[in-house]
Amino acid sequence: MAPRRWSIARRLFALQLLFVVVGVAVGGLWSWRSARADLESSAAEKSTAVAVSVARNPFVVDQVTGPDPSRELEPYALDLMRRTHTDFITIMAPDRTRFTHPDPSEIGRPFLGTTAPALAGGTFTETSSGTLGPSVRAVTPITDDDGRVVGLVAAGVTVANITDALVPRLVGVIGLAAVVVAVSALFTWLLSRYLDRVTAGRGPEELARVFASYSGVLHSVHEGLVVVDRSGKIVLHNDRAAELLHLPAPDDHQEPIPVDALDVPDGLRALLRSGDRAVDEVHETADRVLIVNQELAFARTSTKPLGTVTTIRDQTELLHLSGELAATRTLTDALRSQTHEFANRMHAVVALMELGRVDEAIRFASDEIERAADPTAAAVADAHTADSDRSGSPREVVIALLRGKQAQARERGVDLVVDTGRLADRVPVDQRDVVTVLGNLVDNAIDAVSETCGPGGADEQDTVRRPLVRVTVATTDGTTRVVVADNGSGIVDVESAYRRGWSTKAAGPEGRGFGLDLVRSTVARLGGSVAVETGSGGSTFTIELAPRGARV
Image (cartoon, rainbow, N blue to C red; front, side, top):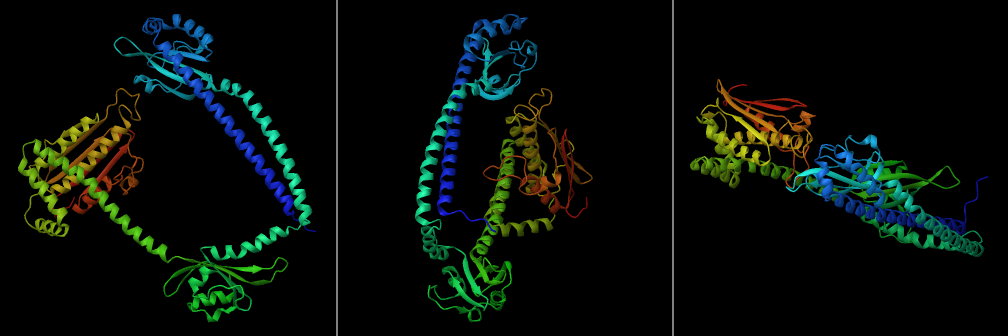
């Protein structure tokens, strides 16, 4: 025998009780988190005040630069901890070596936590795990009269002590929550008894609401809904179905409509008449593209289907939008590629002018303006020039571009070493292609070493490894070889690096991941070759460019 379903009254009681319990639980959790945040904020302010006062104490400044800082500073720190009710006060050297600690065995060991902002001269707070467990701590620098950082002070309170302070508040919150739940449960139980007595456990009001909302729900859904009986007649449909299938407006007293009378394609008519299941079938009408799903409808006590329920979605507008989006993405990629190249070409123009080759710079810039104004004419001119006896781009363009990149590298703290001693007077490719290949390779190398070497990079603690990029451009037997090497962290996946849009850097407003894609496509168009050697010690790109018509 099937278990009896809960009445409306019992369901209402359970739902209201659950709502009250959940509400009280959420309120209690919010109160606890708020109190904890207040205590942590208070602990952070207190730790900051203690750490700053210790760092500014002339006695501490003198001792951290002395021969045995721990001998005098350890008793001082322990006494100050007792008086200020802090869990630890750690005085340390700039290299994290502790001079003081509540556990004497930790003296002389490295401090566990962040120190970079304090070494830069700032005071900061954080919640971090150390030898005493998670704690709220403040770290501040100790500076001498010349403003140099000669040590650091960390003071803090453990999270365990903060949690202990929350226990009295938590007990009060739990007690209040229990009272609220008990009172709410009582009133909800009384209300459920009244409803159960009024409805005799059947819930006529609930049934009335269901039938009243039935029509509104049916006709407000965005998908078309069609119910077909076993005789192949439409016995129910909503407004959206009427619009998609050109049916009459739905009416409560409307006669069933035979499926064969529908003005729809034969495939859709056959599906509605068949009574079969269907999942995301595509049917095209004269003016729409429809996605159709169909399921069998059964009575609760019968295994024989009463008919089918069909839902219909209009995909026409979505397909149009998808096409427009694809076109927009194509245009966006093209604009990003042009933006990526603009900076390299402007570097070449500026460097040529700095070298005193104003005419060459003007000619270079004028070519770019003509290409932007009339791309088709520029392409025809390029083809005509390629067929003529053109000897390539001058050596000065390469040198000018590399000088501009050296200035850019110096601004970012990167050593850019250039070797053009074996470069012929002219490079056997167009100067725009030279700027594209060489400019993008050097930019990527500078980015790579800037992120992984020197201040702020992955090798921040390595004082020997400096960011370095070496560029060699040489001409041998008419072939120009470009070698760009860096001492960064290498490329994990070379093939992915060539893919447009792939980058290890955060995307900027103009997009990322276009440089290597432009290099490879340019070299392929010129008939050259690209070779990559990469590892943990850096990456080396080797490009070989032969005169037009020659093979590399």
